[in-house]
Length: 395
Picture 1 (cartoon, rainbow, N blue to C red):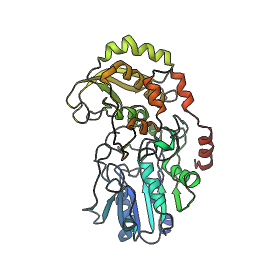
Picture 2: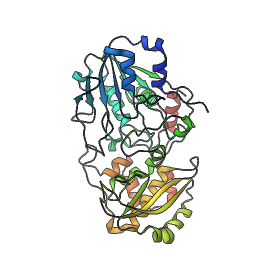
Picture 3: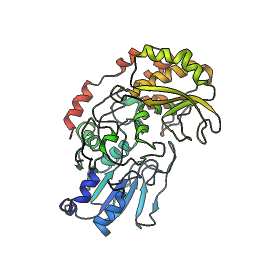
Picture 4: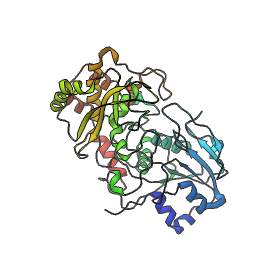
């Protein structure tokens, strides 16, 4: 396969395209916003646009991608190298203000999404699109790969009564879109008010690609996704964020492992879990019993017993189902030692965080009632969504 060229790579190499952007430019980007030679987007913008490059914006985790976890906000500042403002869209506001947008003619977005509904960068994008309604600003999305491919669609559609900053739109858990396609889906299906939107497509990206197929460098897009493999585990392990189990934060394998101090992993695996996996008919993965010691976050400095998800066949691997299955097994194994987290979560102060993560309360009930794995099929109603996706596919 040929190396993928991102939207940033296309812009950086095309002088004719560059000259089409008149006036002042700004960019919403983060740590992973690099070109194929590891040069950051902001440096490329300084080279391309010079003094017309006037503002920077950062999403959750900050422009520098160094802030941990949910509801840990980052501030605004003047960048010491570029000497321009850096505005945080995960601060006292998640929507850019009129003042932030003043003096911008072209607002570029270059964010590495991970293809999962419970990842907030796509909502920073859609809030920005909505803010630009009736403004004389062109929004330009520099497209990037969906690292867990653009073919496989999995999970329940979010119910809008469980809408939050970790799920704003009626999409499944594994949504199958690039971030550019999310912008097009927003304009096509989620709003009546259109804006001046352009998507600069990638070259050589195919929908069936996982990130390693792109031959691009992986730079962590948030502090706890150090490997492309972590993105594949994320739709499963993110569920445990809203429990008292560790999802591996504070270790070198965050969001690839789960555990709790009261779990003895080998005996639990041999006596119960192995047989449950066989009955589930889930494939493409191995759960490896292990112990680990979180150095921060949940269960700090407590030895936890648990499991690492090793993906052995990405075509057969279904992370949403595996996550729900493992949550069900651990909920009943731990009994009174298992807890759901309480609000607030992502600025919602009333609903249970697990229901916001799931986009429904039905899956929590499925876990608590130890219902059959085949019932997960009934939560997936993807026909209409797939029709919408086919209307906006650009690859």
